[in-house]
Length: 220
Length: 240
Image (cartoon, rainbow over all chains, first blue to last red; front, side):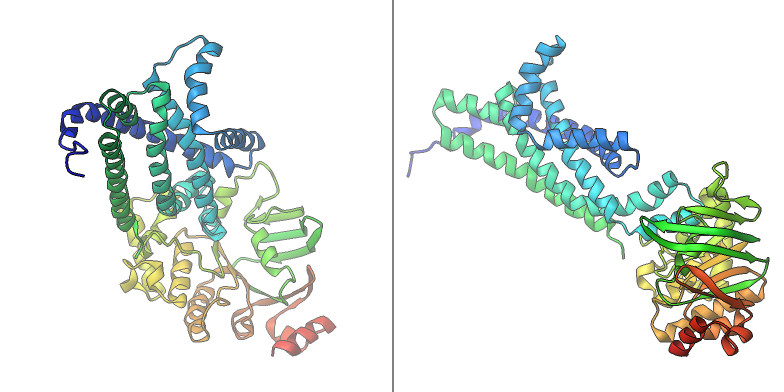
């Protein structure tokens, strides 16, 4: 095995992989932040008694969940501009894809968590004279949020990994950089291994942070 | 204080309340008894609109609940409710549970709400539990906190929905004691209960419900010792 793979040579490509890492993180963070807001809105839409709100939220969730991320990415980057006449750069498109995609799944997480709170909690709040919104905000949401954290962590990890698919719409993220390097320097083993380790480092860090948050929010 | 006229409540095809008429006077303690499925909890929950009313009128403190102009939130501030399952907020400690509604609804300052909460905790004998979380308390303690929480809104009347049914037998007494004290202070109370001893001792009037109707009502002495209806007799025979 000696000398067959040039692991030390990976160091030369670290700056380029670093650029990729930057875009991966940028798209993940901004995309998931927007996704979380979308998920909150549409998740509450799914528990709404208003039929129109419920219907809109359901259509969004079903369309996104029912189509592959890869198709969504390609559609938004290549097809959408033909419809709207407005070109989005690849990074913006990437953020839109991650936001829309994670938003649909997070909406279902939000719905499930809110619905998992015992009915008596809402009744107790309302019987004290709090209105629906106050009860949601002070009683239901804080309890639901705590239950959301494990599935949210799961979704964050999935979405971070999904950003690697954005290489097909030319987002200069980690996987894109890896492919670029490997096809020029024929060091697939070293580079793709390094890329995998980078992803693992991100997701493990996230898992760690989530576990701390979960412990902080733990009710005695 | 509470006037109920020809109250009907359906759950889908199922008619749970089949025309309830009832007047409750200020400071009166009314106990509602009856077999399970008789509609007594549903009746109670209609009094603060936790259940929508299918037809009929419920007038609480001069406000008709079925009138779409009525602000149900403001009516509810005058009606305290205590649930079988306590329904304390598990993410808030005892004093926060009590302070929440006075602060958010009555717009009390933090200090005023805290003072009021401490006074009530003293009243229910749980001053030393102020900083604990509901999960750390026994069922009886939780229910006493729930009573304090309802009282913190300074309601004009209190509804109790089987307040001791979820408690271990040895914890029932402490909750009934608090309720007894409230009754003596002149609180208007409607209590759905299986505690016949409480109904007999504290109740000014007892309603016996069966199959969605008030079958018989009267003062406890009369209803327990000399029931008129066969159904009341049958029920009392089974449980006493």
